[in-house]
Amino acid sequence: MSPDVDLTVPKPGRHALRDRLLALDSRLFEIGAERNWPLAEPLLPRLSRSANHGVLWFATAAAVAAARTPRARRAAARGLASLTLASLAINTLGKRSVRRPRPLLDPVPAVRHLKRQPITTSFPSGHAASAAAFATGIALESPAWGAVVAPVAFSVAMSRVYTGVHFPSDVLAGAALGAGAAFAVRGLVPTRAQTGPPPRPRAAAPALPGGDGLVVVANRASGSADRMRVLHRELPAAELVECEPGEVKDELAKAAARARALGVCGGDGTVNAAAGIALRHGLPLAVLPGGTLNHFAHDLSVEDGRGLGRAVREGEAVRVDVGRFASGDLEGVFLNTLSLGVYPELVRERERWSHRIGAWPAEVLAVLRVLRTDRHPLRVELRGETHPLWLLFVGNCLYHRLALTPGRRTDLADGQLDVRVVHGGRHPALRLLSAALAGPLPLPHSRLRPSGRYPRPAQTKVSRLRLTGIAAGTPLAYDGEVTDVAGEMTVEKLPEALTVYRPLP
Image (cartoon, rainbow, N blue to C red):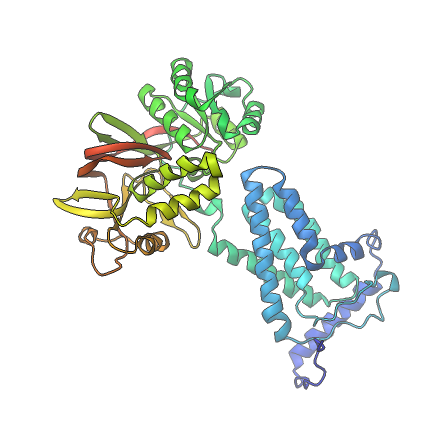
């Protein structure tokens, strides 16, 4: 193996300012070596070794994720992503740019020496970079967990000077690079605090001390037991009702008759049912995420029972838009999205096979079965013209693609329907992939017509949409539920129609 420090490389010429800084750096190193660090001898060398190859941080991430809250899991993932980016930067650029030898160990007491001395170049400190990247990444997502991890990260960074393997400037440079990596990850994948909707328009909702007057219906199939226990600790006076999926709508209707506020715990389909009943009874809605994706709750910045409990106790709430659709005798509302075309067929195929072969294999099989067909799943008349479509997507409020993250809404009361169309034609997989990768670029109304061989998905914003010529038996998906529509369908906005509890800054 070639040496990491190439002694044949000529040293740079003298530079007064640089020489003074290097001399100061060496003097600080010597002061640290001469100083007695209380309680450090049995701890810091072991802590320094435990951080080799990121082992300490992977174990810490597992411990944080074990808290089983969405924010803790996101914090752990962000910390590891930041650490990975920092390590790549150190190993590909940092160590190769400044080939600085390690400090001489003569001033450092032998009891502090590591059993195996590192052979890489000294500048910058990879351990300090990893520590700072992990701790900063954690703190950007969860300041509370960041405060827990920060002392450990600081101790790891200091251990590199204590054990004599780095100069102080190596540690400072590594820490700065690590923190920069964490902020770079945040630029690529924004935190919830960056992407949460604005706390407006604020709404008048009853403050319910202890949750008195709140009735929460939970879908037992969503695995909501842990979340309900947390909510019960926050709101001991609230009435909590757990039921099977087939009983959810009946229990919600019963709860609405005796509640001052209606609560729900479950996935997006369960929340959709609760929203329709809350609208009919004029009740504020309290949403506790309990499903797999929980789009509405997360876009509302409601993550767990603690935040929701505070909002209910203090009467913190906002008004949000609701989408409504009608086709013949069928009427319904949606809080997230409505779609015609490929997606509803995918949902049906997946449900047909999931109980036989499992969820993920069923997902893959559904995609293959739907996309290999040559027929267009949907033909509609839009503005007097018939269009073959692979997908018609309608979002309740504008969906944004934020850096590399999937689409999210930053405003739940913008009064708009986000309409996107993937036109029919050959190569459906390519067209749908193009739709998935396309950013939220507003297109003029005229671009709803197909153009070119592989047109970009068209997008427009409206407050009302009318479709005609829908074939009988065409599947419609809304908030994860699937039904059939035919003939004519209208979709419209109900601006600021629903009051929802939301913890405010």
